[in-house]
Image: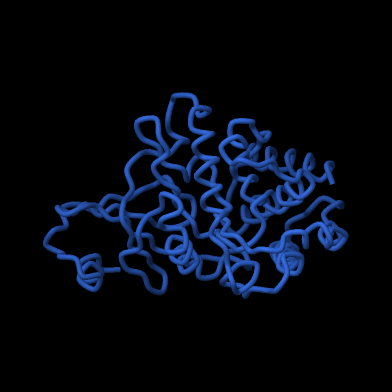
Length: 284
C-alpha cells in the first residue's frame, strides 16, 4: 500500500511525511506510525492469512467502533478507511503492558472510562457487525459460540468435553436479561490501553468489538485474574459472575483455537489458557 497515495486520498499532504515506523506490539495486523510535521497518524493494514470465522473485515469493525465511541472514551479519530486499511490519529502514551509501575493506580479511572463507553447503545441488534446482528443477545451469542465450535472442527483443535453449545442454550433466559445492545471493545487487555503521566490516554485495537452484554468487557479487563475492587468502583456497578464465567469460556476458546491458524508454538501460553478455560468451565 503506497503511503503517499493514501495520505493524498485522506486530504493530507504527503510532503509532510518525515518517517514511517513499524509498530510491533500488535499480534494480528500490520501497524505503522506515520510521522508528519502536522501531527502523527497510525496506519493499520489487515492480514491476509487464514483466521477464525468472525475474523472478517475486522478493519471495518474497528473503524465503526472508533466512530461510535468517539466522545465517550479516549479513542483514535478515523482519518480515512477502506477495504483492508484504517488511517487514524495517533494517541499519546505507551501501553499499560509496557510500564514498570504498578497497574493498580489506573484501574479506577479505567472503570469509569469503560462505564462511559457502555453508554453507547445500538439500535440494530446484537452481535458482531461483520457477521450480522440479531434481535436477542441469546441468539447472537449462540451464533458466536457456534462459529467457534465450527472453527475448532475446521482446524482440528481438541476441546474439553465440557465445551458444548448447551453451555449457551441452557442459559437463554439469563442471556436475555440483557435487553440493550451496548458497545463492547472485548480486547481491553493491558496491551490495548495507553497511559501517560499517571492517566489513561487511549483505548486502541477495537477490531474485536461487538454489540452485546457489558459483562463481557470484564473478561479481557481481568485477563487471567480476578475482578478487582478498584475497577468495579470506577465502573460504578457489580457484574453477574455466571455470565462472566460464560464469556471467559468464549474468550479462552478463541485464544486456544486461533493459535492453530496463526501458527503459534508457545506451549507454555497454551497451557495457561487451558488452565483458565478449565477454571471458567468449572464455575458454570
